[in-house]
Length: 311
Image (cartoon, helix red, strand yellow):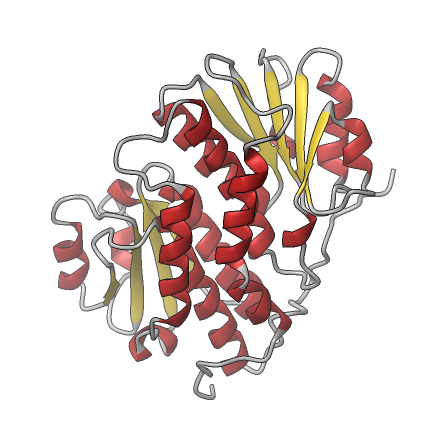
């Protein structure tokens, strides 16, 4: 395999660099948005692929802030027997079959808020309210800035309605961290590794899953993701020389030492960067590894921008 590049002309790379400004704009948009979850409501959040991982992160943030019970499910596995006050849908294209089918099932029972990148998409008419984040939409197949901007939008909403969980930064601080994440060099050992495991606790677990997905999508890489405290319960066995364990956010006690004992490469900034900003570093890694393998991160194998099923 050729050496991964540290700079890239790819469309995906350009979209990655736009994230700090997109998050700031999302925070402004959240201030006047209709259909946002209200404190005390029972809320479900859904999406597919990357959007599902953002849903997981938001659900953990909302419930951790004390603003109400919040669950996250992939649209294809949604438990329709449950009862909620509001459904929040994250869908970049607004055309995904499973998402539109779910909205049709629950629209008469619950309020539905859709976050999408396309004002002309079917989901806008299907939902009660829609937040169109079209400035964060992407041309590339692999999602980067739309997904993180959707989470920033919902996260800013939590700031406005009661605050974030203790220790979680506001969107403005996260955007500043994102600018740092865009320019900090990636360690050479991380770029040339053969396997990567991403770890995160609380709301950062969804981000760890997304980091691993980006590596699989863009680079066809062997990646895994786990809640940080689950690492010792089996996943530690995969780490070793030439393999990476990457912790997004603050690490649980002694976890860094446990990783170091494996002989693997440890990536942890001790929680210095906001976990959403640290996800940007993983996005950059995915592009670099893809290009080092002779792949085009803009057109990953077997993927399309939206999954639309026949029948």
